[in-house]
Length: 286
Image 1 (cartoon, helix red, strand yellow):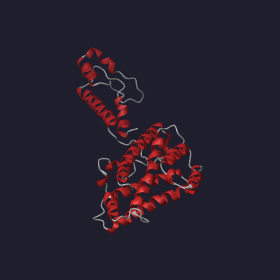
Image 2: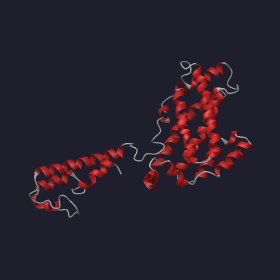
Image 3: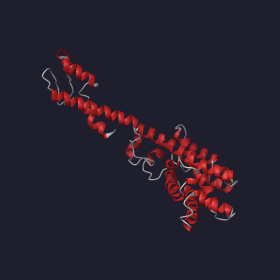
Image 4: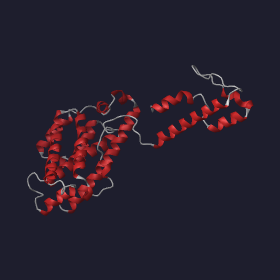
């Protein structure tokens, strides 16, 4: 519960719900008996005809504060519970308004690196090679970036340089690294979307995401390894609990609802960026 609301709740319950009620009560002495509240431990057990202006003023202020808090809660995007997603220092949403040509390489790679740590929550050592592959592709792109930081500030500059030098298919090319990084995040985005629907087990969500993204590009050995990895993923409830910064929060249904909404939003933001990369690669036959 929002702390401000918790602190205000006790006082708020002592008073009528609308400011107009106070005006009516204050101007109609005959109806002041309505201000009687038989509440346990109340600091104001009875308010009668002798109630003074200061008390009315204080009650009005309380109602105004409570009303403001409720309105603020309804209209703000404040995170109620701390989760894996709320703790991220980088977010794909910062790229939503940018074209592929404007995607900052260093920031993009930092964001990918932080987001993909989500697979650690699968709690399976079998996923270690998947994460290692992602980190390896990030490292390849960083090496290209570090060759000339002022020149390769964007992903476009990095890939376009290899297009011009006809090295897009060279071994360990940055173009190929970005392609596989994109596929890995198509897997992550698809998983977040599938799981956020809320009616799938973790195994089902991971499997559907894999079939959509990585499976078409994997050989038989990689597919077999992934099939084994699926057997080791935790159940749905354990996975959700692993996303809570404070474990006790995970038992609140509102935490689960918030987490699913966050997953859906993150999936949308990731997909938005990946679509820009896909369109550029398709345009240039990469």
